[in-house]
Amino acid sequence: MCLIVDTNRASLVFAQLPTTDFIPIRDWLTSRKKDGQLVVGGYLEVELNKINGARRFILALQRAGRARFIPHSKVSAEEAIVDAMGSCQSNDSHVIALARVSGARVLCSEDGALWADFKNQRLINNPRGRIYRTAQHARLLCHTKACRKNLG
Image (tube, rainbow, N blue to C red; front, top):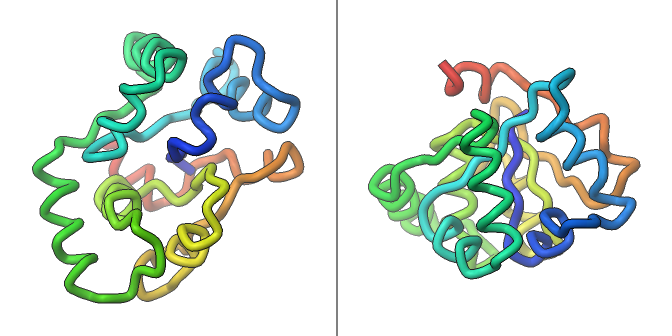
């Protein structure tokens, strides 16, 4: 699945020496033997750009063809739809909108309310969202029909 990394985990995932739990993400995104894809866009892109290590790493991923940027206009339009649904428990409707527009179905985050939103079938479905928290979740780092369709 395409991956979204929330800002509350970005400094750990994109650190020069990531913690053990985030090495599988780094490997999936950077290994020539794997086909990892990071999805960035909308307000999440603005937030990630404020984190130096994240900004540099994402730029390197973009140069390698491993980061996909979704236009702010698409994410903002979808965010308005998500907000109108009134189903979000978190204050991160921009992350839900990004997942809906991009087809990404794996989220690396430490925000419990966002986890509930990401797994809410009303907000994200076909396939449902999954949460990456530890190295034990490395099996989630693969593509599904939702992100493959949006990869082109």
